[in-house]
Length: 84
Image 1 (cartoon, rainbow, N blue to C red):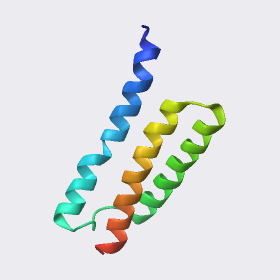
Image 2 (cartoon, one colour; image 1 turned 90 degrees about the vertical axis):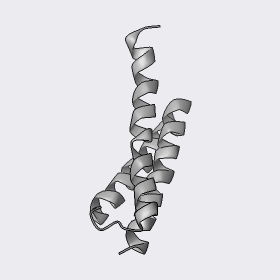
Image 3 (cartoon, rainbow, N blue to C red; image 1 turned 45 degrees about the vertical axis):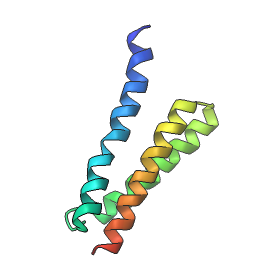
Image 4 (tube, one colour; image 1 turned 60 degrees about the horizontal axis):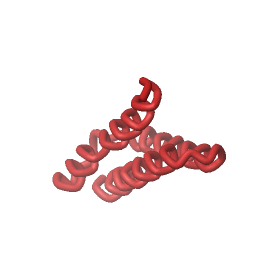
């Protein structure tokens, strides 16, 4: 296995996992005041486009990692709107 075979899946795992602590904290505290609504919308849209790209190139890892990230990003976005 070379560095590229390891770095792609690892990058996908880390960037996806990065949203779990924020989603859990927002859910527990019922507070999303410090989260930017604009950033959340742009991020969710960007991740959605990564999913479309992954489908276009037939990359299952890109589709899976970004689908999970999209669900977490939308969850945080819903919390942002709900817990204003």
